[in-house]
Image (cartoon, rainbow, N blue to C red):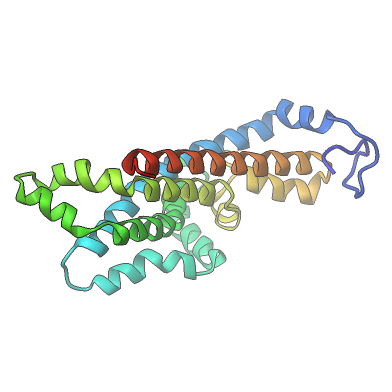
Length: 237
């Protein structure tokens, strides 16, 4: 539908044109929403990966009370409907004037993205033999040295996967963004919602296609990096 020559969404498309892609990339509002989404997704990817990896380490390797409660809290955002989370975040952010801000989106999307990192890194840690870490500690390495020289190289594919899922969870998220956006800070998903109501042209289809292709490309890059990481850490493969 993004290639159609008509001025409205129609399927099958009538004719072939790239005019709607030029309109998308040439529109100031669409580009502002796209770059805003990319900044939020990149920031969320970093924070969620750090927080999620630390949480997974605490759950798998840590010896602490209430571990089950911590696991339930870290995975709760996957269970709670996003519309409930969106309303709750709006009620908290509105008095603090965080709606539409990079900080507000970063907090909200990090909460949503952390469970994906926790799951992938937890799986990677469970496949790692603890004897390797114990051997490092017995040889005189500190826990920090053991993490960076033994643990991290072996779980890096899981961290890569979690980071990709965190990025996509933020970039593609629409429900929470609908509640915490405003006129100054709007994600591409919120912009799509607005255009569906007020400007139903094939530009929406062009924006959707670009988003899907970018997501697929990111997944492909992550898969290649993960494969290279496995090959480097396991040369026999």
